[in-house]
Image (cartoon, rainbow, N blue to C red; front, side, top):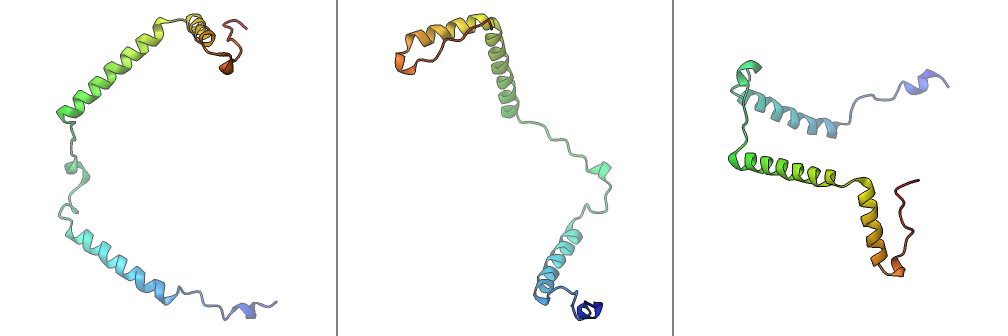
Length: 105
């Protein structure tokens, strides 16, 4: 195999694909020219977004709920949870029977 066999291969993109790319580039150029703040530095563009009253109320309510949930879970020890779970298993019929959980290994 000589390199002469590959000399005839064209390395250019297909013409149909090139035509599609040209329209995209024109659109990008137009958007850049229409932007009035394009020449302004980033320092003067800083925008502070504050949450609305509803968003602040929602966030505070979620924090309170999470705090209550943590306190509720912290009240019981692991041993108490295991005993409660075993009581629940005892109340079920034998159809759902699984071995009791031990709090010691």
